[in-house]
Length: 324
Ligand code: F6P
Image 1 (spheres, rainbow, N blue to C red):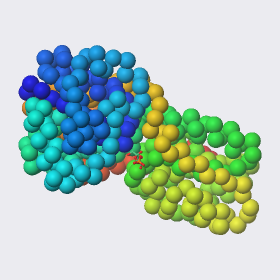
Image 2: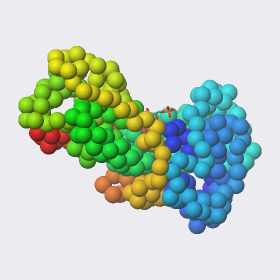
Image 3: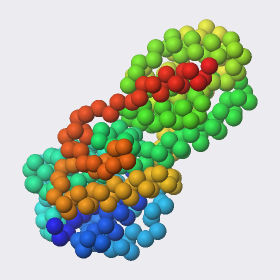
Image 4: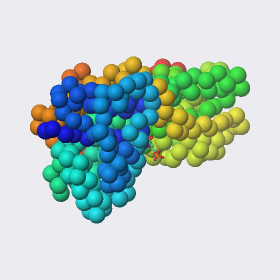
């Protein structure tokens, strides 16, 4: 393989730049030409493809976001869009791809391979940590720390005013960000999509806390929680509590996607970027590079897409025990 291209796709995640840097510098090391594609699959379709050098990735290891920009491409979901993308790759002489992204990115790469046989190796880049085949995804650790910083601040004001706060965190259908930020922030409860927590249980926990003179409480709600978002939940709980409670809701939103990546994310992204590139050069295709038990492994896209990544329910149990 003489020429490869790298792109970021889907929701951006802190550490993506460190991953791009590892791909580019790895390619330079191995004597392979490397191109960048801007705005994910949209850039592939529009031919927004340019050569990169070692210098192109100077001073980016510490930057959040992605210098290649990102997009969720509707056009790539169509056969016409994928044909345009293929024509552009052929025109630019690209023989293999490194895709940094999540589930949607790898679904697109797999479809593309079935039609045009262009090999892709993925690096898991998403704050959600929802991909089977890696213990952690690029950006997750930073997102948890960003959420935690916000939770700590909210706890100060919750405590000053004797309030109950519902804090909604991101994660799409996954409760990973909620659980870890909840444990680290000393939350009274964590509500996640993977495990149903009846409203009556939340009410009971709050009442028990008040009976022990607990004056403020923090409840972390994952955005994908099956009972609804934090606003809906807070209203239902207010109705069931039966006494007047001073309650507020904060949705953290996209603040969790930005910011300087943590050391953990930079190192993870560097390992995964180089691992993805070297896998591609060694003949891997349609797999995602991941780190499991501190070892680099490759998992078929089909498994990363289809297989669930279960949460550790023991951690939810721990939240209850530690909030007593
Ligand atoms: O996948 C990352 C993520 O931030 C999810 O946590 C969230 O559900 C979604 O993307 C938000 O997407 P958008 O930025 O397109 O609104």
